[in-house]
Amino acid sequence: MKTEAIYFAGPRKVEIREVEVSDPQPQQVQVLCKATGICAAEISRFTETDKAAFPFNPGREGVGQVIRVGSEVKDIQPGQYVTCNRWQKIQNLDASLAHKIPGEPEDTALWLVEPVARAIASVQFAHVQPGDRVAVIGAGFMGLLVTQLAGRYPVYELVVADSKPKNLGLATEFGATETVNTAGKDGEARLEALKKEPFDLVIAATCPQPLLDLGRQLCRRGGRYVIGVGDEAGCRGQFERAVRAMWRGLVDLKPLVTHRHKFPEAQAAMEAAAQGGENYIRGALTF
Image (cartoon, rainbow, N blue to C red; front, side, top):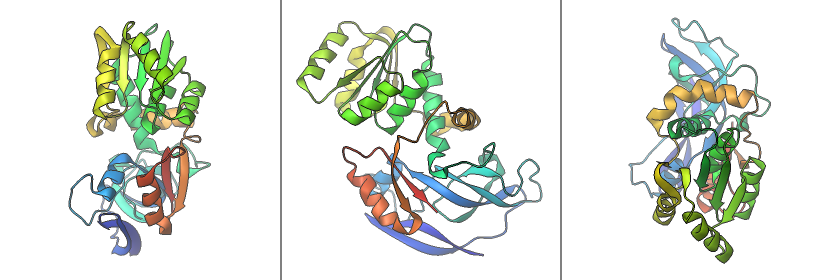
């Protein structure tokens, strides 16, 4: 069977290629991808910040509908919605990686399960405790997911620091008790004051060195300091939790997926993601 897949053919060059898809192996499912997110790793590969070789078929945040199952797959049926991976219209993947969604999503572009699993892994690793004073450094897509999750804990204080006013406004909606704009003098003064009353837990959801240094300064002696939001290994066991949290509406991606493009517009989607900007939080491709 022929299908189409998106490849990064070189720095800032996207191609849509025709590829062959075989019948699913006994322990595989075949999925018709409906949507996928554009993550930071893919932006790094596109801009060649990550120097890995081309061509490259990206993808880790997909969702789609099962169209066929292998002979040994018993708990997934055609028609069910599951997580998937590659930026490819029809794809085979191991059934263990196809995490079931309870029903048909109303908007598949909002079902980016993998980053939610990473955020859950990060919060779990941080051992958030009732009454904690918590600071989140960075209110990008991942930082706002962490804020949504931490905001549901009975913490005493949840302070979020970032340079984008729009993102800080969302952080307040998600449960932040205070936001600090790191781009202004008032924000700098507030951060200096907070360093004198350091936090029980600091989660740095962004990696520029000055912000990592800030996180250390805001964490009290004996406190917990988490750098980054969930690695690939840590999030593997959190997909089912992520699906349940999203289905219950405990995590809301609607205000976070700010840019959408159709499959043939992948080049424009990646250019928009690379450019970022004040209003860009997360992009999604729909198939």
